[in-house]
Every structure is written in structure tokens, then in C-alpha cells.
Length: 208
Length: 288
Image 1 (cartoon, one colour):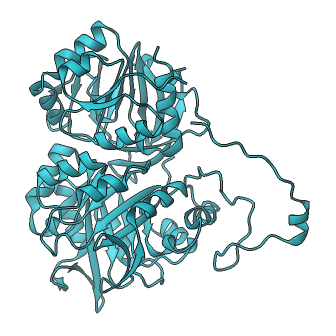
Image 2 (spheres, one colour; image 1 turned 60 degrees about the horizontal axis):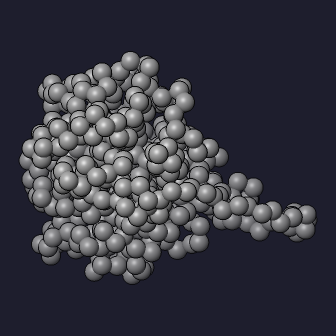
Image 3 (tube, chains in turn orange, red; image 1 turned 30 degrees about the vertical axis):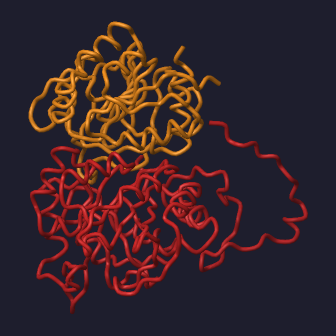
């Protein structure tokens, strides 16, 4: 098992970056950095875009740290793999409705919209929920249980060709997406115990 | 379907875990780092770490402790105690917190709830409300001034939900550390007032209390502290009994699915005949 990939967790001021760092380090990966340094980012093999935060604040921070350009260059230009987690995945979208309409990275056509389930379902959607895998993706190569920890009020609405798994919460919610080298999960693998750690392992194993 | 959450609360005083009784007496238990590692290994769904000294002593949250304690924590952890500005939340999120809990600040600084929700998203902001029963009425309890405030917990819950809170943690002062079961009337009054997830705390004695509160109210999670601190595999054993009636997550290898329990939900010894027939089975270490 290769553990020498240069992994960069993008630091844009908000997000539970340390939780993700702990989980990945626990798996034995040695070259893990939390950084917003453009030079270090350009040397990475693979990226994690963390979540936890509000969409507009996150985009504002990405821009003010000049991260949008370099991510476009690295992910779209050089096709380096990236895993977006929770809000990190939502940033891949064209637009979000959170706190007014805001433009995203526009890597995967789709909109981030408020969860509006029927009565008896509280929002945010918080807790462990089962996912239903509907397309093959390296992310779920190694798991035998399908519950993960979710915590979100908005969800990624996009064409079903991009959706690799969904979950049920009164309505169908996108649980994971993939488009070429761009991967995203709505749940938190860093907080989904062994099941989540296995997802990280599968993702990094799929990186050549 | 979304599963109900079995949550452990860890109360910190003077940097160690304590058993709290009625928000008044505190008995020492041990290291928070060890407590978190064990709860995590035993398959807890979520952890809430509350430092009850910081607001009282007017000091900063203990970032170093959070950083150390969360190193082996792969379930969500909420950190509370002494948070009164955005900068502190930011530092906590960089130290390993996933969510933060506001209690005193939510009472006295409404703007912080709104601003924090705007920056970190409302899913990150838990508002913790302490409630005390006076006569037939529930009132919010101010743990710093040790007195009740003329405000109903359900009204405060409704207010902070509108300000941007993503979850409510409702604690019963009267039942804290008393092992007499959750206060269902209090919990239902809060659940009925808001459309965000509610976590209840205070009074859990055994699996039955979890089953009762999950069946009799709309809580999204139920929390206990003392129940989990004093027995080996307390979480695995409690979750096994809860899972007979309620949809919860079972993930640990030691899942006690073939064990029997007495009326008090204590693990029973297997019958001699069963033990004699048991063969050793090799269980391979889970490869991640």
C-alpha cells in the first residue's frame, strides 16, 4: 500500500481541517499538509477540499487567497484528483442559494439548494444515514457498511450522471459525485469512523 | 433512513473529566484524551466535550487540550465552554472541533449565534440550554449565576433556531447525574418548538431510557455522560440493547449481538452449555 502521495488539504480559513488531517495521518500517510501556499499546492499529487462553513464565505476566502486560479489550473488543467468534503463538494457547483445566490467553482454543472423535505424531517440533516450506491466509483471499493455521518442544510442538485450515491431523507439527497478526476462526498468520511477511513484509503489507492 | 444518535457528553473541570450531579457536585473521573479514545473505539456516534470552567474563569477555550483529545477521534465532536467570539470558534475548528456549542453566549450575545452561523454554517452551531423545573414550569438555568431566568427553554430554543442555531442540546439540571431517566415533558416542549435537530441530556441510567426517549419524543440524539464512564464496553453493550428496538448504527466488531441481558440491561454470563459448545473463531483484524 502506497503511503507516500503528497496530499494537500486546502486551507481557506474555515472548515474542520484538523479533523481531516488526523484521519489521514492515522492511516499512515506521511506527506500530508494543511496549506494555502501556492507553491506547495502546485507540488501536490492529490487534494482534499474540506467543508464546514457557509458557501459565500468559503468562495470569498478561496478568492482572497488566490486559490481559485491555482485549483482550476491543478484540477481542470493538470487533472490532479481532488476530493471535496461536504461544503468542499458543494463548491464544485455552478451556483449556491445559501445566503443569497453565489457563484461556485463551476466544475460540475449543478446548483446547491436548501434541503426542503416534508414535515417531520428537521433541517439540518444531521446524523448517520445509509447511502445507496448507484454508480461504480473507486471511493466505495472497500466498504462493507453503507452508513456515513452527514451534517448539512443544503444539498447538491445536479444531473444524475454525476451522482454516484444518494441518501434518503424525505427527499433524495446527493451523497457523492464524480466527474473524471473530481470526487465529492456530502457526508464526512473523517467523522464516519472505520467506514470513513476506508473511503479515504480507497480514494488514495485510486491515485496513481 | 437517518439513524438515532447515541451521544456521550464529557464534562471537563480543571482539565479532567468529571461526573456532574445537579450542576452542583463534581467527582473526578480521569483524562479526557483517554475517555475520547475509548468512547471512539467502543462505537459512540458522537461526542460533546464541555469545559465548565472557562466561562466562569473568563479564560480562553483550551485549544491544546482539544488538539490532543481529538487526535484519535473519528466521530463528530462538539466543543463547548467559554466561547464568546468568532476568532475562538475559528481556532477551535483548527484544533479538531467539528461543531461548537454555545450556552452562556447564546443567552447574552445573540449576535454571536447569527454571525457564527453565517461564517461556519448553521450545521456547525449547537446551542446548549440548561433547564430547571420550578413548580410546574420549566425555566432556563444560568449556570454562572446559579439561578433560574424567567424564560421558558422552548421559547429560547425557538429564538436561537431563528438566529441560526443548527441543533439544540437540552440539559435537565434536576436530572443531571441522577440516573432517573430523561425528562420527557421538557424534551417534548423543546422538540415541538423547533424544526432543527434536538439532543437531550440529563438522567440516563440504561438502554431503556434511550429507547423510551427515542420512542416518546422526536429527539435526533440522546446523550449520557456518567453511564458511559464506569464500565468496560459500556457503549457497545448499551447500543446492543437499544438496537433491538431502535434504528441506530452498529459498527464495532464487539457488538454483543449474541449476548443476553438482565432487566437492568446488565450483561449476563452465558449458560455453561453454551460456553462448552463455543469454539474459538479467528476474527481477523479489520484492514483499513
